Image (cartoon, rainbow, N blue to C red; front, side, top):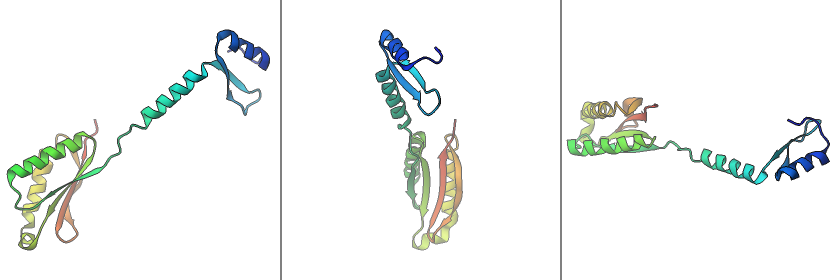
Length: 146
C-alpha cells in the first residue's frame, strides 16, 4: 500500500522491482494499480479456470432387468450399479415386463426392493419403485453425499 502516487512514479517502482504495473480497477477515481508479475498472474488464473472445469457432470446410467432374470445376473448388475454410483452418477433400474410377465408385477417390485436394499450403503432412493408407461417398472437411486 503506497497510496496515491503519479503514474510515472508507480511505473518506476515496478521497473525497479522487475515486475509489471497492472491496472486492477480502472473505473474508480483514482484508478487502482498493483505491482505484480503479470505473466504469473495470467498463468495462475488459467490454472484455476482449468481446475474448475474438471467438474463431473452427473449422468443417469440405466440397468435393465426382466422378472425372470437370474440371481447371478442380478448380482452382476448390482456390482455395475455400485461402480456407477462410485463415479457419482445416478442409476435408473428398470424391470421390463413382456406378455404374461405383466401378471407378476409384484415379482418386479420385489427385485427392485432387493436391489435398493443391497445398494443402501452407497446410495439413497430418489424415486421409489413404480410403473412407468405400460410395461416398465422403474426406480432411481443417487449416490450418497459424504
